[in-house]
Structure formats: C-alpha cells, structure tokens
Length: 466
Image (cartoon, rainbow, N blue to C red; front, side, top):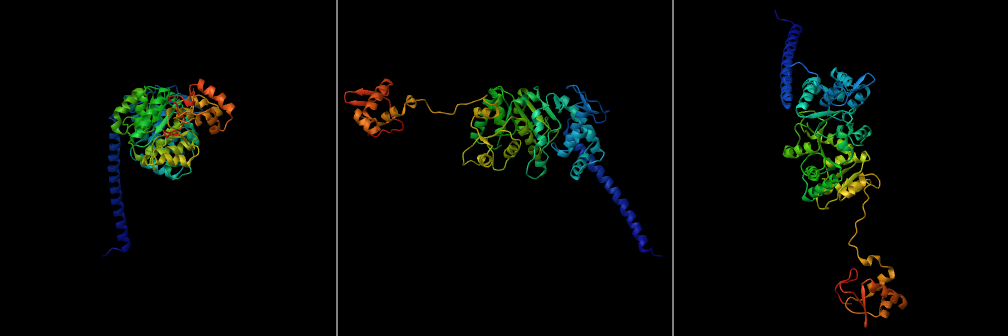
C-alpha cells in the first residue's frame, strides 16, 4: 500500500534535519579546532593543559573605585581580553568600561549581552577562535618571558595626553574614523617609564618610499630634537619612520616606536636590528596583545595614538593618500601642533604635505628642529631669531650715507658736487657724510675726488663701468 504524501514529507524532513545537524556539528568542530590551533601557533608555546594560574603583577598597587578593582590583576587581564575580542578604540566597549569596569564589561560580552549588532558580530566571530580569559592569561604569561609589561590607565606611567581621545570626533565616515577612543592598555618593551618618555615627545611620520631628501630631513630633525632631550616617536616603518628613529639613536636620545602588531613580532622584520636598538634606548609599545599580526587596518587605528600621545606631529613626506595624512587629520582634530616639511613641487612624495598646508590654516611650515621646538615648547622657551644673511657694515648706515655710497661710481672717482647731484642731497650734507664714510673705511678721499675703498662694492652692483 503506498504511503500518503504527508507521511513521505515527514520522513524526508526528519532525514534532512538529522543529516544537517550531524554535518553542521562536524564542520563546526573541525573549523573551530583548526582556527584554535592556528591562534595557538601565533603564540609561543604554553602548556594549555595545565591548570590556570594567577598572573602575578609587579606594577603599582591596585586601587578600588567603588566596588571595582581598578588596576588589579583582574582588571588588567580583562583589558587584555577586551583588546583581543575587539579592535582597540571601539567607542562602545570603551564607554562600557568607563561605566562598569573592564571585568564586568568582559563578562557581559562573553555572556552574549551586546549593546549593538556591530559589536555582537565582532565579538561572536572572535569568540569562536578561543576563550578570551584563557587567551589573556597566555598572553600575560608570555609577556613575562619577553620582559614586556602591560600598562593600564590606573598605572602611574599611563600617558595623560591620551585622555584627549575621549573627545575626538571626526566628520568622516567609516569604523576606523568613528572608533577613536583611548586605549584600554598598552604592551611595553623597554626599561623607561612610558609617561616620562612621552611627556616631552614629538612624532615624526611620513612616507615609506621616502626620497633621499626626506630621509635626510627626518634624520637631521630627529637628531636635533633628541639632542635637546625630546623623545622622538614614530611607527617603526621603512622610510621616514626609520630615519627618525635612527636620528634620535645617533644623538644618544630616546625614541619610541608605536606598533600595529604584537611587541613580540615588530613589523617590518627588515627593521629587526633597529627595533632591538629601540628597546635598549627607548620603548616599543602596542595596543595589540602578544602574537597579533600587522594587519592593514591596524596601522590606521594605531595612528590616533601617535597623534594624541605627543606634543606635536611633523610630517616630512607624504603622498596624496597616505597614513601620514590620516595621522595629521587626527592631530588637527585634537588641536595639536600640525607641522609640515615642504618639499619639491615636482615630487609625488610631497603632494600630501602641500595639500595639508593648503587645506588647513592651522598647519605650520617647519624646516628644522628649532622650528619644531618653537611650536611645541612653552611660550618663549625656544625663541629663534629669523634667518639673516651675512652681516655687513653698510646695513647700519643712515639713509643719507647709504645714498651717497650708492651714488659712487665703481671704477672712477667722483667729486662732492657730482655725488650731491646723483644722490639728491645738498653739498653740505654730502661733505658731512663723506667724512663719516671715510672713517668707516668704506670710501677713500683723493685729490681728484671720492672713490670706493678697495674691495668694497655697492649692493647688487655688477662689473659694468659707470
């Protein structure tokens, strides 16, 4: 007897549901295990089977804010986990941390309580890779092996200027231009205190494909700033960044590299020797945890820190569209000194610099370390005299004496009467001024008249006879 159509549909539905469930379960398990293995490989080896250990923090003593443990181990680990779950600068996460604290915010996100759909998508995708608490623990334990430390806002060495990012608003669209809030934490390699390094600091940024002109200017400028006990900050890239770091190191000064990846794998690897020098003589810092890759969008996120952490930013060379010009947009939005080195109008590497100057009345031209210090220092601290040509005795002459000197022929003598006519002065005035000019060694009085002293020439005069 043939089965009814409804019975056949029920059997088909049960079979499809079972197969789909088994297939989805298998693929999900395979994908999750594969991605987890990939992330684990991004970190140096850690015993994942051992019992979780409490990470010992050797920084400043923890303090409490109401019922919140601010700056303690739990707060520190939660900030690391949040930075792994979402990209730094996320305004929603930052606001949640400000209101409820980092541990509560982390618990809320892990539990699936999301204020908006965009944050839900980001955290859900990230959570598939691994457990945020466990990842943070691994990263913190590995940081101790690297002699790296995590600095949070409650630490004494947290840079105060970064709080200005809480009010940064840009009128351009896109997530990177909207998520510009202060960092939750920094990973730091190097012995110096972060706040001391950044208190008197200037950022020098520019093109990776720099010209010889650009690298020369960046090196000389960084050398001059470091020689005045100012920290030179840049991004560690090829070109202008590397030239700025090297200039500061050559002056035995301090330099800071702000990375867009983990401090255990500074990018680019071609500058590995330079990074080791920076660790010895300055600091490597990053918002991203150990093992983080240098993805393209992270450089753009990183640039807000360069703009906010320093007293001013100098762009040496920049193409029409570049990370350096994006950094300067944040500098201008923060009302910080935006300093630009002009270049040849024929150079593609200076187009961005010239556009900044044309489009922003608050951008200033600088050509030397002295110019930079005059802009970023306290009022009157670094006053520089305007450039002048070589001093000449004729610069101090009164107007009548200068007229007589200009009226003298170059190759022959002139009588006082001739000088009076040429200069448009009275004979009495000419005779008085001739005596003064002779005493000054500018003219000679002879029997046949007055001549220029040997080696003296009127300003701008050629060798043509009068």
